[in-house]
Amino acid sequence: MKKLPYILVLIAIIALFAGADYYLNNLNGKEALESIKKISKDVTPENKETPGFSDAIFKLNENLMDYKVISQIQTSQIFEKIDLSNINNIKIYLDRLEYTGAKAEVAPSVSPESSETASKDLNTGKTIYLYEIHGPANQGSLTYLNIKLQFIAQINATTETLNETSEYGNNSFFYNDQNYENIAFLLTQVGQNVFAFQFNKTDSAVYNDVKSIIAKLVSDSKSNLPNL
Image (cartoon, rainbow, N blue to C red):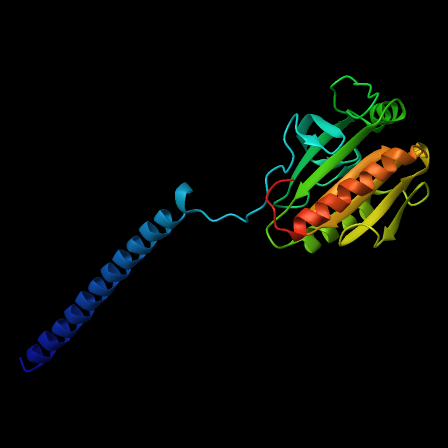
């Protein structure tokens, strides 16, 4: 009979621990539920934060010096050859620029489906293919480097080379393809954006136009103008 009080005390202690465990478990559950609700609220579409990057600088039918943007498409490649889909958070626009100056011949409004198509276009008139590559804000140098690494990984070292030059923008290089000796492929970083030009390098006037466009891009980048 003397053992009975001890048994009652033991039962009371067990009940006390069980009650405390139940309370703590319910408290954690409530806190977790509140955390989940808070996280769900934070990631709703209107509250999501995404890396900021520019939309297309040039617009369809916009005049750019002696050229006009006659077509614009989104793409994942540069020069219809180098795939950039492995680079996160970039947008690529391909603008076809046609010369509208004196004695200009308007070419059909089509975009190149291959390097062969672009080669024909570039050899028959003053056409410039301009790629706009827009990455995360304030990461222009990193975007340029990532693109350059993709070139290095994908080109044929026997027939294709990169020629680094500091002549254009902040950073730049020429991509050379022996199969298209008359076509120039130039990629340049201007401020926080990267641009690529594909044009007929045998026409010195077109080459000068490309250099003028780059100079304007650089000037406007320094002026922090949203549009050209």
